[in-house]
Image (tube, rainbow, N blue to C red; front, top):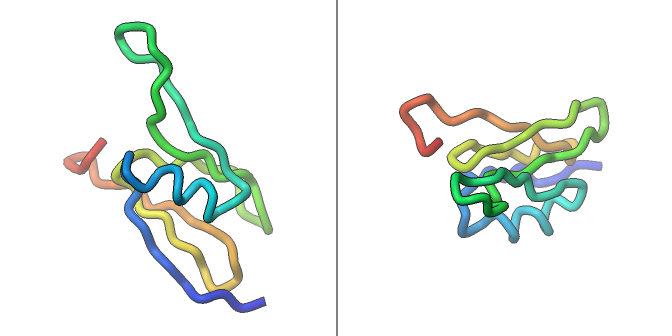
Length: 80
């Protein structure tokens, strides 16, 4: 199966759209300093021969032509 490649920078605004687009993923949460659970990224489950990975806000998620997803971390000076 050949898929059209696509690339997104993960943000709070597109988190839920990417969650539904990717399918084999879940929202990653953390507890903030007030004790509330808040989303801070997206966990992409292991698929194909790719390991499970965590995309934080600011990271780039790429859909490869084979339909798998990879994550390129943002630079330390980036949005994290």
